Image (cartoon, rainbow over all chains, first blue to last red; front, top):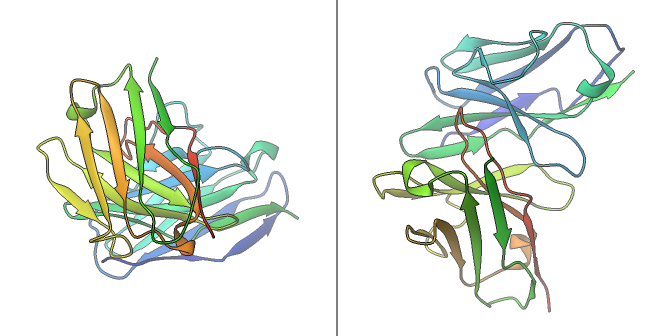
Length: 107
Length: 114
């Protein structure tokens, strides 16, 4: 199985600042990498798929980059509604796996 | 409007079996890759199983041999048969598309405890 490792576990950032979240895969996942946002008490929501393609309705302040085994989610100017838990997820022909999550909290 | 509605979660004793259902509307499950994902209390997301359009199935190591994913095309419903349940299977179970067409159910709670 492919193991996804996210860092940091918790990130404290002030509103209006930039947040950078990292995700590493135990082996290459090519471009089959997605990012999800989950708020307390809600189901996750897809933000990014195919490393860098924003899902429908996702604001431009969210961007994804990377390839192979190293990936990054960047939120350019944090809004109050962005404080949540973020998960990276790989998908290949033999299944999927999630990272353990990064909690983005208000500084 | 697409809706995925899970049901079947309840309190069950260790070693028992349970079948979860995910009824879909506005979406044809046989035309989509359908997955089960769970989230233990206060923990992260764990992918469990996927049923591809062609019928292939894959499982996470944590549930392989104990859980079975299936679908009923006539009822447009996805299932997860869970056997030999353990305390560590306690979680909210979601069905989801896990694709660019992103749809999740509201989840159903399974509690494994004596």
